Length: 403
Image (cartoon, rainbow, N blue to C red; front, side, top):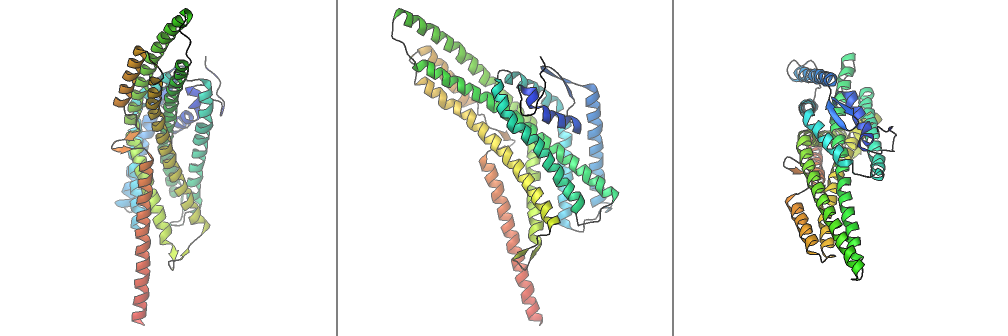
């Protein structure tokens, strides 16, 4: 039966994903209808989504034309123009890819819904505390960041057209953010499924450790227990295979959007830091105008938190999947039954052949990616700072020479 949705009190997959699905529906990127336990394509929603995506693509092309061809919008700065070009190009790619992959995404959500139906309500309760807070506060932070840009921007004087441009930019950012949050939510659900398999194996080990003296009743109990454990092992092995295939499907479905989001975050963070360094005075004093500092801090914190959250979810999900292999070997050392040992060895081989890693194209989403991004941004900023210090020194020498 359909249960009433409550904030922070999820009981199933649909109630857990309710805030994320609602935001996607408002943005026009959720062309599905939900019939209790199935996702179905909705013709009215799909038509509305197609119209919205077409309008976004047209506006993207029009803005790029106004900036670089007709020069209607003049930022008077090459770096800012390149940043705008990168944003509209990448966001347009994400929007169009999201619409094209809507069918694959619906099948993925249906598969995750079926897999997660075996999770207990307590698991959803714990996940809802993270996912609901993350989805709601993330959207609020993004809206606040865009609002600060509307009211505090100083590069050009705002007109009605400029406000519409910023609202359109906010809409594109919300779409990219929702795709990232949807991926993280699905990842957390799959991580809970891996954890349930691991918990069942740990409980199986406890049953094997608790031995009974070899009496007649004990022999019967051993036989029944081993048969039960064999059935349970085959079930867990089948569930693990389905979850692993779902993980691969999820990586393929979300790879284009996530790759574009990571590139966009790297570009925006680097350029915002560049603009902040440019405002240095005398190489020591940093301008702390509250309008500029607010935009800088909000943008940097938002992109940093988004990438950090994405990497954290992928890293913990990978560790949870790898933990199953260790538990299997612990169970293997706790039994002497040949049939159970053979089944555990087959399970172990299946895990070895299924590398459950969270990747996008050629990049593996783990802590090394976050470390590489931080190192790259730090290197860029050190080069920029050194360049400005050298330029400032050259200016002082030229002034002395002229005098």
